[in-house]
Image (cartoon, rainbow, N blue to C red; front, side):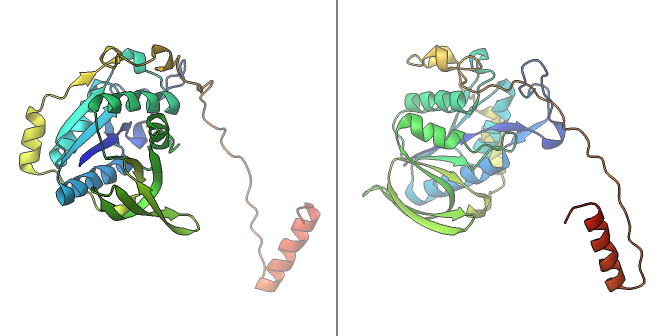
Length: 266
């Protein structure tokens, strides 16, 4: 099986900084981590490889420092990695990001399964995975909690989705894109041999010129249908606290009711 995992390097949540002019996250020089939800996607890809054979290719789009995220995936057991990095990709919204990733996946060739985390912790939109599926014209299965069946011969796939109101079992045909939740597995630690291999691995970097059939007008900030117009911190909440003193609970309740009636809250 050919398994592709899309991951993202995100700023450490305590170190998020915003460019006030462009309204985009400042990533260069900021401590970064692999998006936590993507770690579960990597692990699930490795488990599928161990079960059915084949290879796992990890793809990420970001600045040059995103190579570190890819190396971590390789250290865990991924076979290959590709970084999409180009000034032309800067400022991409979820639509432009999904378009760029889908073009890279087309260049990689035949695939059976694409795995993504359910969302990135810096944007929390959950849109890139489904966007990739839409661009490629394949089935999307989101919030996957468990892969119940996968048959490479019949191309049948059955998954269990974790929804707010319960669980849902869905059947589909390969190729398909799955976004996974953290309950699907427990990511493994990188091995010593994996770390050595990742250190020596020369990760290819693809720019816009390496995706020859890509429409340049759909890349980056200019190709993004949505843009951040303004970024600001919300004003601090103001208010006062009134403590109601009473001898008994009934007296306190009565005093509270009188206060609420006087303030016309009820």
